[in-house]
Image (cartoon, rainbow, N blue to C red):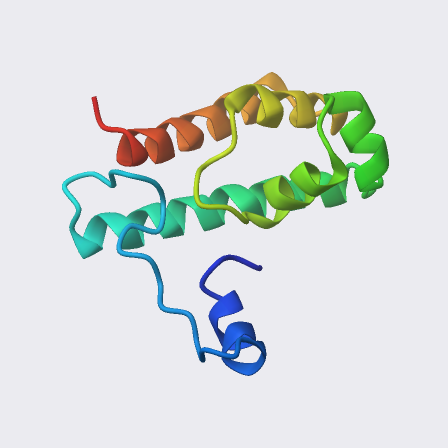
Length: 127
């Protein structure tokens, strides 16, 4: 699973200024009350969402990113980021929902993933 944090070791080798430091708030402007526990919980939830999306992709016969992108209406790069959990903010729900439709997922599974996505959004932007 790739994410910003795994790219730090890459930067250590290729950046002339040395390794990159993680941003103070890796997942947007606000993460809950800003505690390290919130950041860790958010990271774990986002990893779980990406793993479940990747499993759905695999169970659908691993359609190409080009096919998925065309049906969802996003770029291949966006599909890659969605399936691999890359990015500083969570994806929009409608992109995930459309992707799950392409994968032929059941309404029950869609609702389960929506609940997980809602937990992530609550940590990213508490009301």
